[in-house]
Amino acid sequence: MSLAVQIDQNGGPEVMKLVDVQVGEPGPGEIRIRHKAIGLNFIDVYQRSGLYQLPMPLKLGMEASGVVEAVGEGVTHLKVGDRAAYASQPPGSYCEVRVMPAKCVCKLPDAISFETGAAMMLKGLTAQYLLRRTLPVEGLEKGDFVLFHAAAGGVGLIACQWAKALGLRLIGTAGSDAKCQLARDNGAEFCINYSSEDFAARVKEITGGAGVKVVYDSVGKDTWDKSLDCLRPFGLMASFGNASGAVPPFAPGMLGNKGSLYVTRQTLFSHITTRERTQAMADELFDVVLSGKVKIHIDQTFPLAQVQDAHRALEARKTTGCTVLTL
Ligand SMILES: NC(=O)c1ccc[n+]([C@@H]2O[C@H](COP(=O)([O-])OP(=O)(O)OC[C@H]3O[C@@H](n4cnc5c(N)ncnc54)[C@H](OP(=O)(O)O)[C@@H]3O)[C@@H](O)[C@H]2O)c1
Image (spheres, rainbow, N blue to C red):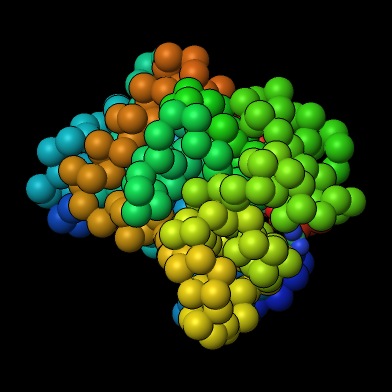
């Protein structure tokens, strides 16, 4: 048996309930993992609220770490007793123990704690595919400017540090002066408080009128229009989230008027479709963390039983860095 967080209908944090569930044996390609820590992500909010529609009843959570308890037929990269961590579908990581596909579960290096492993997989693999694989047509070189929204958040603080390690000049945005300071302390060369400043005007000023090569935008509705104005010709608008709401439909003709811009909507789950690709991305993430170039900031922890409070804090923009649910 395991305690697990389940919803029977979409709604606010109050729809999340702890239930007892039966946990069986892993089938082919599956493992059973006993969690040590669980990562909180904004995608959990979209799945709970119904912005992303999934069948009910629904177990929540996409990220965790733990110890492998049982291994199904055909799984060769993990064995019983391994420390492991993952970002993976299907949702259901908000629990003590679960059976799940092994494909996206990676062995966790000994020097990385369970808490850090749980905090960093979904957010760190996202920073990896954005900065390393979601590039403008002309590529990114040392010294290039990029704009990264919500720079003091979970994905944001990892991206600030990783971009600096790659030699990129990251301009962050965040919702308060304190959050901006945190982003700068973690490698953002500039950080604009978009609650009080016109970020498009500031980006133009910082880049001497040229604009940035890429905007990485997870805020969505509130930042979309102005983000397009931050790009230089042939620049890339990389949309990857909707923290403020989904981006409304737009007419592609305006991309021509703004300098033949490119637009993409990225999701981690297109990148981690195979075991090999997932492991290659995770290896890069483990390297930057083990080298100390990227530190994983766990700025909030909540017991699993207080998951409603964790969601409230995340949605109210009261968190910075990563949040972990403890067991
Ligand atoms: N597509 C993918 O593959 C993928 C993977 C991982 C994450 N994501 C997206 O990346 C973003 C960051 O994820 P995360 O888990 O690390 O969350 P997070 O950045 O820690 O939290 C979201 C942040 O968004 C900002 N925000 C702006 N407007 C907001 C609003 N109206 N309501 C709430 N927050 C608002 C807030 O920062 P400020 O107060 O500084 O504005 C908030 O702290 C999310 O949008 C998430 O969906 C996408």
